[in-house]
Image 1 (cartoon, one colour):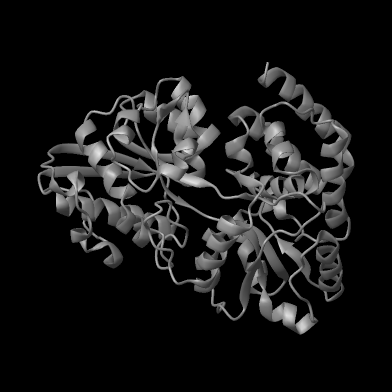
Image 2 (cartoon, helix red, strand yellow):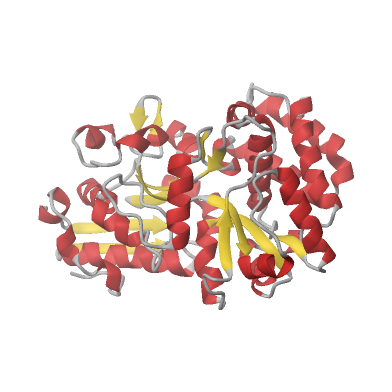
Length: 418
């Protein structure tokens, strides 16, 4: 075998885990994979997947191209249009729509029907558009508030259950000379996370998804109420200054150094906090608190996916690779705390014995009665998401611009959803 990569992760070395067609097939030719798993832990995972899959198929050459995660968002269409790879990774639900409608993703419904993805039945809907399936999920993860437990203890604070308790905690934190929240909004999507939670907690999951579908005006008073709740935090100085100049990674040191006590973020931030020297006795997690009593709690739990390009040349190898990634054993390993540090999608996988993964699993399985959202820039159409997140970041920096921002977003809604 000639493979571009030959450095498997130790946790993925046991290729005997896999049974079925993926392990038994004789594959040959070249399998080309393009991935945006560019951060250190995800990159190690995709490189390990490629190396281990290659060892299972010694006559198969595998070429892996890893693209910067942010750059991939603008490059994916060109990659799929001109000399496309066989397999790419992307996102579930609405984020698939442009590439499905453009005929750039392969319809793999027959593979689902053939039983390639046992254990993924519950998430089939997230991969379905136009009554067909267009890929497979390999990981998902909770969002929530990760905080410095040791600083909470120092200040005599407890995890808040309501927004009023959150505000009260924040005031104590601000009075201590710290910011309540770190955030890096240079790439905009982190501001989308704040809007998701404030809107779901103010108006409910169903309202939030109706807004994402273009069924609600951005100038609606209920949307304004969401921004009013957000402004309470902005006006009290809850966020680190100049956050528009930081990426999400560049804002992590504020938490590590104790200059900010919390971060509304996905569980992918935990390995970075640990690597920076914070122990699990210093970090903890809680669900975003209630704002409007009686509303079922909705959660952001983005799902990452693999797809086969419509122009794939080695479809047989691509099918086998997707079956391999979807298997319960592989999903258990790649989502463990030493790998992605996220949650496996396969119902037959095991959730790692990790404090934050266990908390996230419990929250999503037991305390997310409202529903599971994919995230602002995945639930809203791409153009609306881009314009919307620009407005959200602007609001965080210039909250007095709200009327102008909502006017622009409403004009965009009327144009985009027509």
